[in-house]
Length: 331
Ligand SMILES: NC(=O)c1ccc[n+]([C@@H]2O[C@H](COP(=O)([O-])OP(=O)(O)OC[C@H]3O[C@@H](n4cnc5c(N)ncnc54)[C@H](O)[C@@H]3O)[C@@H](O)[C@H]2O)c1
Image (cartoon, rainbow, N blue to C red; front, side):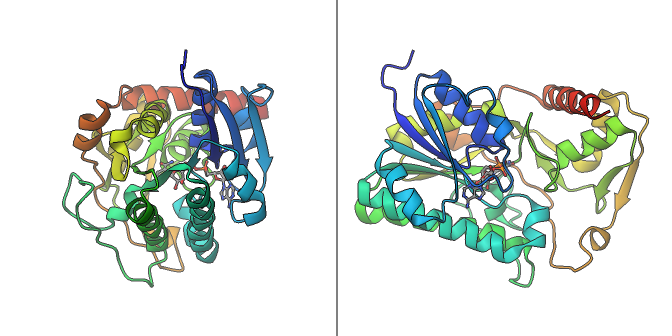
């Protein structure tokens, strides 16, 4: 049992990663307050803990400064996950993306700095942009495309979050941790915002074509959410990790075409793979893809001895089980 329980504020705690994180923190004997505007999150993600006496949820936005002030004042430390998320959303609503990400983080830090609360923020592998320096190391260059390409708005807003966090660490020694999450997957990840694994598995289970964007040769590395939240909890409590940028991800690389083939095999699906040109997926333009996205996990291994435990086959089977349960309910 946790000898030093804390009261954590989890922004975006009704989301995919936030809900798994909140469950783990509660199981560790901590007290949790979640703030979530339910824009992409779902209250049912918290079904397992919503009645727990140590759990509280506020439905509202991190952009609401008056609401945030007492929440930050009354907690011990903050996991800041609330953000606009998902390529589809970012392409469709770029203004909201930029404002939500950066303005929300600014509110969090305004009060965290005032009340001296530790903050861990979840940035993204997108900040490496078009860098070809694979595997991506935390101190490597960021190579982002033109501002006419809306997709880079997400990366830029998240980069600015990182700058703000590190500036607070430097100027006033506020304890901060910046993590860059690579593709995180597992149960509860919503398909609606363009996430590849739930989309492809959903199609395979329904017998629909698996739409693979571009030529499918672009690669990604997928890490199970249970491994990710394990890392987040350790990074928050280990002082060595303060004022650092730290990658979290799997280093097992797979092309999206191979991924689609694996999903068809593991779900015994009769579906076919369909290549869809990017111009068809994003007819208004503004999109270019990253070919490879592989993390170096040397830093996190050295700091806390972490590496992913679950492999891609386990991940696919778990998500397929969850989606087929949901599909049965809807029939
Ligand atoms: N899932 C991934 O692969 C991945 C990869 C890189 C980074 N991240 C980062 O991890 C974090 C969590 O992402 P996720 O995958 O769980 O997505 P998610 O959409 O499930 O979670 C985000 C949560 O934030 C909430 N939210 C959004 N704006 C808010 C606001 N203004 N106020 C309060 N709540 C708000 C949403 O309702 C949602 O519950 C995000 O910061 C995201 O950028 C995720």
